[in-house]
Image 1 (spheres, rainbow, N blue to C red):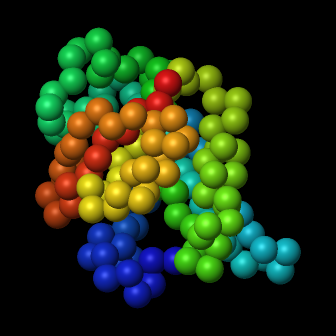
Image 2 (image 1 turned 30 degrees about the vertical axis):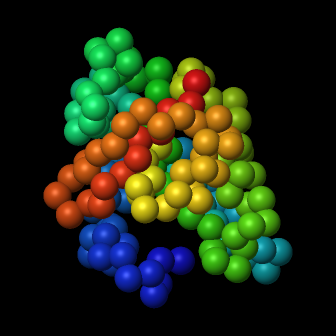
Image 3 (image 1 turned 135 degrees about the vertical axis):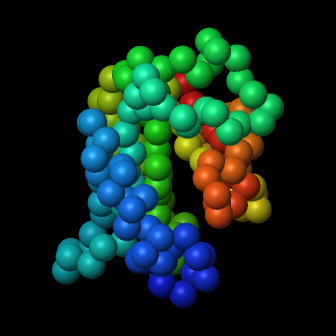
Length: 150
């Protein structure tokens, strides 16, 4: 689904270790959408933040300790939500998002999205997410908006 995106972090070599990290996370969860013939049209995944997470470390402005203290069940980190171009605007993203989070025990959800994607930021805002800061979570990553939804 990333093919032709031009995103250097979307190459198989760059993406595989990132995905491996999330797959190894305790309570990792993933939801996918397919056409009736089995063609993948989208997916979403993530995991709860652990007590030793670095998720909040690079955010500016820094958040207070009360907002960033994790216990392994407080915050679900939605790592990725991707829908095939041909299926965008159909509600697939929202259905995937809601299916992944349905029944989860965490009291809040966080996600990161590129600062240069205002339509995506507004979409997440319409789903109840609030912007809490910005970050560059690792070397080579773009500047990202950090969002949180209770």
